[in-house]
Structures are given as C-alpha cells and as structure tokens.
Image (cartoon, rainbow, N blue to C red; front, side, top):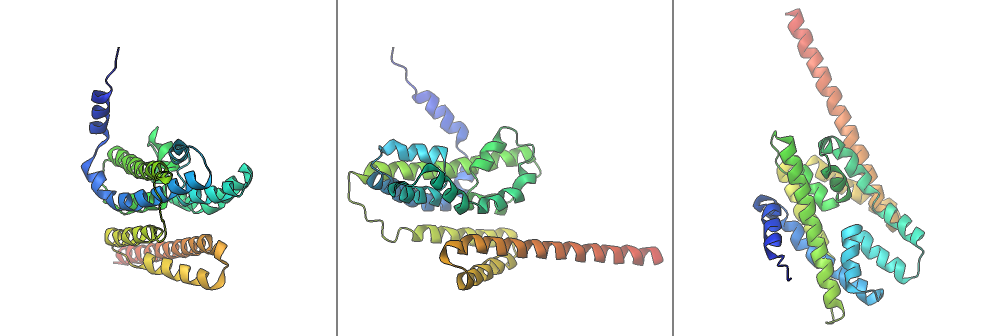
Length: 256
C-alpha cells in the first residue's frame, strides 16, 4: 500500500503558516539563508561529513556562528570538550537574553523549553520589539512561531549549502556582510518599536570602548557585559527617580 503523505503535509503547513509572523521574520529569512548556506558549504568541504549532518546540526544545536566555529575546531581535530567550551563562551551572551525574558516565558507550558532553546540574537530582537496585546497565551504562541520560522530559515540555508557544496564551486567571500546588514535592519526595527534611541547609543559606545581596550577574542562578550550593566544602571536610576516623584506628589496631596 502506498501512503500519500501530501494531505498531511499540506494540513500541517496550513496550521503552522502565519502571514503576520512570516512578514515579521522576512529580514531574518534574507539573512539566515545565505549565512546558513555558507555554513553548509563549509561543513561538507572542510569536514567531509554527509550533507544531512549539517541539517541535523542545525536542528539539534542551532547556534549560528557557533556552528561555523565548531567546523573550524573539528577540522583542527579539537576534542568535543574543547568544542563545547568554545561554543559556551561564544554564546554566553544568550544568558543575558534569557534572564530578561523569563517573565515573558512564564506559563508558556511545553513551548517554554523551545523558546529558550531557539533564542538567538535575531529572535531576541524580534520578540522584544514587536507590538503585543493583552492575550498572553496568544502572544506566547506567536513567540514560538517566530522562533520556529527563524530556525526553519537556518535549517533551509544549511541544507541547501550542504547539498550544493560538493556539486558547485562556491565563493563565500563577503557573505558575512549579510549578518551585519541583518543586525542593522533589526536595530532600526528595535528603535522604531521602542521609540528610544538611548539603548542604541549605549550599545554603540560599549562596542567602541571594548574595541579600543580589549583583545579581539574578548570584545563581543565585553561589549555585551558593559552595555547590559549600563542599561541596568539606567533602569535602576529611572526607578528611583519615578519613586521619588511619586512620593513627592503623594506628599503634596496629603499636605493639601
């Protein structure tokens, strides 16, 4: 008996497809597919592994730049422990992302684990800048869809790159600019969504400071730490100022 899976696939696609989420994640699509292809090409040309290994890695690990770093380490015959430590250090900034979203993920049920697993720089930017409504469950469902779409884009790029890697000669020179362009677009979207330019200036100043004083392999995590501490300090200062204003206002009312 031949089982036709196409109706099931169409049904799943109709359930999963969300037009507004697709439009929201389009910038990530245009950034992740070429970068994922670069990863796929490097995977099959430097490691001599089968193409489906790139797909499996993007499904199970989904670490973006960390996967490209892992290729370099594995090609240099590094141990799995060394690869794990390097990936952990490179992605340590995600700890800050997760801490800031713990409240938003509370009550997400089975989706919570996937939301934490799939939290990348680009997904974090979309989750924190998009407009939200009062229905928390519906918003968490949309968060999970955004995360899922973004991972699908990365898997698609990885698989295409791995399949084409041995079939055609691929010059990846300059393709890394796709990631820079993607971050510029997401920063603009963050600014438009939040309506505040201070975080952008703090991020730029932190990056400039760390570029000037730290070695190259510590600049990224250093900039993340400096920017995070500065933003936390600014947040606490605003809280105290608001509390003082409220106390002054209440005191004025009681005297009146």
